[in-house]
Amino acid sequence: MDLVAKGDDYEKTTGKKLSCLGFFGSKYEDAADLFDKAANSFKLAKSWEKTGSTYVKLKQCHLKVPVYD
Image (cartoon, rainbow, N blue to C red; front, side):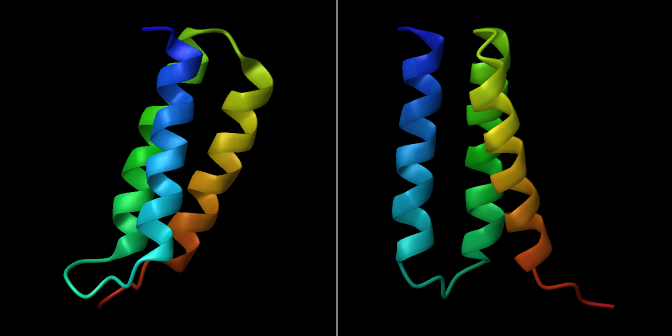
């Protein structure tokens, strides 16, 4: 499978995760994991523009993850 297509699949799955209600665990943590996998696929494919935009989405997910002291 093409690495760019694999990254696109991860991003598509991430969109589904973010649209559903997250009662068990954080949907943003799950989405961050998928964005990380997508970014790594894009990086291996040397698709730098997609890599950068995916890392921005990953950062946005990390900012929404609740922090417990």
